[in-house]
Image (tube, rainbow, N blue to C red; front, side):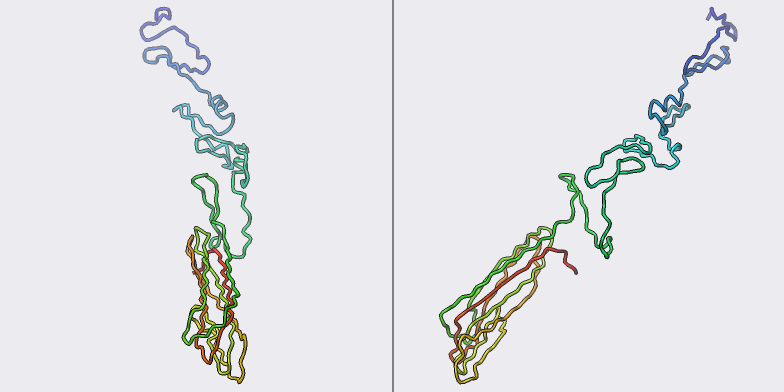
Length: 280
C-alpha cells in the first residue's frame, strides 16, 4: 500500500470505524488492522420482537428465547417457537371454551362444578375425540323402551285336560336399541282363565310357562260358574348390546276333574328395557 507509506513493519494509513463496525490493530505486520461487523443487541431485539423475549449472543451470532425479563414466567411459547409475552390475546374462544390464549388467560374448557355427592374420579363419564369430525363426544346416551301385548278371548267351553296342557302362546320381541351397552329388562306376565266347576270338579286354574300357580276344587253340592283367578309373575333379563330377546307367555291348565271346563283366557305381557351401566 504505497499511498499509505507502508513499509517494514508499519503503515501510516488511518482507518476509522463506521456504523456497526469495529477496527482493531495498529496496521503493522505483527498487529494488523482488523475490521469487524458489530450487531447492536437493542436493534436486533426491536426488529424481531419489539420487546422482551429475544436474546442475542454477539460472540456466536445465536438468537434465542430469553425469559429472564419475564419474572412471573407467564410468557407463552408456541409449538412453532414463537414467543408471546404476557397479556397478548391470541385466539377468540368459541362455545365451550374460556380464555384468549394469553399467558394470564390460557384457553381452557368451560366446565361446571361436579354437583353430585359421589366422587368424580370413580363415577364421572368420559369425553372423547371423534377421529372423523374432530368434535368432542360424550358417553353414548341412555335408552329406554316399552312393549306390551294383551288379550281377552272368550272361547267355547272346553274340558280341562287332566295333564298340564298349553292352551295359548304369546310372544313379543324386545330389541336393545343401544349398540354400545347391554340392556336390563323387567318382564311382567299376567294370566287369568275363567272356569265352570261342577260339584266336586277341580282344575289347575292357569299356569305360566309350565308353572302351575293356582288350583281350585269345588267341594260344594252345586256348580260354580265362571270362576276366575289372576296370577302375576315378574322376572328380569339382560339383552346384549344391539341384541334382541323373544319373551313368551304360555298359558297352561291341567288336573281337570269332575267335568271342569274353561271358557275365557285373559293375558297381559309387559316389558321395560333400560340401557344403563350394569353393576357387578
